[in-house]
Length: 272
Image (tube, rainbow, N blue to C red; front, side):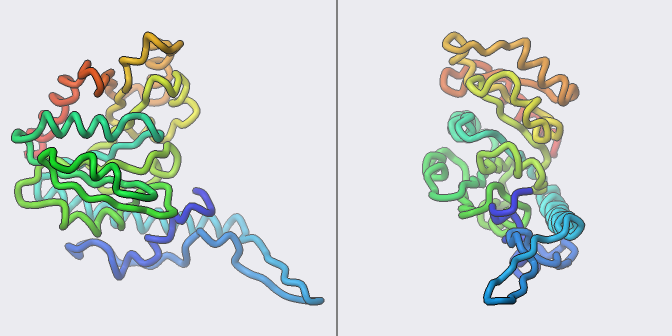
């Protein structure tokens, strides 16, 4: 986990602000891991800072992840209670998550009641793009955190979900590292891999792909203009997660979108 991204900032005050349905266990981590120093002393007019011991750093990170897990389980129970299928969308920046959601919401409009939570460090530009497409949309600005966490999601769930909602998309912050470590309470984790990123991304950043039930290979319309090799990409995915399903699509042209919509419809049906 990174030391300066603010990963632990939201988790340290989770007790007083999290889970509007109040069915998660309450626990406090020792402290956030954003402070790279835990002690200092002064002599001869000079202040000397001491980095934390590896054992303490690991324990604090484990505490934060344990608290996030508890909050994620509470989110999951709440979503299951209302029979909502929640999808955590993870990818690198620029892989096409927001365009995919735009096209998806247009197709689902009037068919499946849908809501969207959008995560970005700054601005509500993505949320603005998704407005008016038949879904309730809520933007989370993480400011200095490179991922969403269960506590932030729990805060906005009541404002974005209503009694008709059956499908929730959570568009995570564009990042293949930190978002992979934080369960949000989702029913399904879907990872996007765009063709311009190359074939070896799953080998370089395996964690999000290992935990994915579905990988969407996006921007297939660009293949004629790239040196991207389909077989090498699929082989890399199989090495990391042979159980994951793979769909290839282009949100721009619509190629492969029918299979994606069928996947969503089936997931909602199975959820009751």
